[in-house]
Length: 347
Image (cartoon, rainbow, N blue to C red; front, side):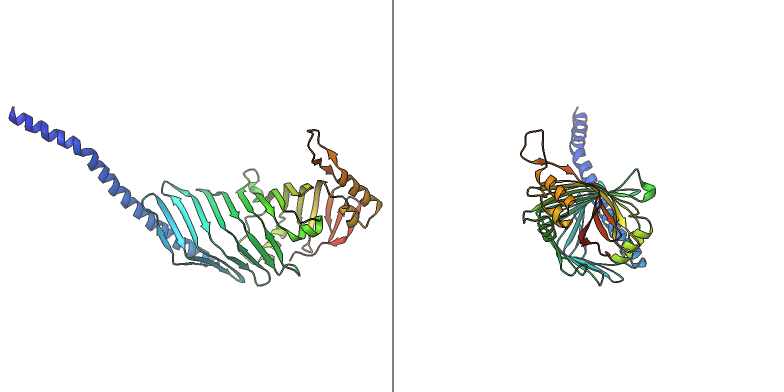
């Protein structure tokens, strides 16, 4: 009886400690696995930097670290830079995070300032918070999203005066168009909340902030390779690239504009194409733009009065306008060429 009791006691202790032993083995295996993943991540980054360098794009990641044990992989650069020919770009601190069990979903937080130049024009940007997310698969990019709080962007070198854009929040989404793969098409969704755009203030009148939403499709988009902006645009134009405006909605105080259509670049590098536009609250603008011709005055009166919504709201309904045409460097509204607007070459 004594021997049997001792064996039973040892058996009971064995099953008592087995779960803890298994948990320890799992923890050791997980730790080994994480360090293997960390090593492969570092090797993959170095390999990608090498491939980019062969393509002429030199990336610099200052003070790079890879950490995040036990469940994440965090890659941090004290600052991030890119040089490709005459193109130079720089960011502040960049941190990318992925869960070890979902490595193709990457969230990145980017600190400013941003500076991007091709030697002729320069883009500078600052923000309170900028986060991006990338969904990828074995076949490539599935979706890219970005959100920026209180961003301010300034472009110099494209026009005589700097172009300044600041707003409360910017949201951006990009994905390959699954139905137009042969056209190398990408869908883009962009929204700006409470944007301050001086160019719109002078065009539409008033200093109210602007809300903008755009749903676009860009064809021949996969050819972009980080070349100077003029070379990128010329490649896109010569390949027959088009910008399909599925919806462009702008609201500025009592003024509202919606547009749909398609745009491109003509051989002289000017915008070309046509937009179908509806608007309200633009009284006087059309008359001024068309030189106060009778047709322009009529359009201005229509836009000023508008059609009332049947829902009983105080906001006027949108009034359809004649097509807005970008043609041979001129802007025309229906049969009326707008004399005060001449479209310049973009590059």
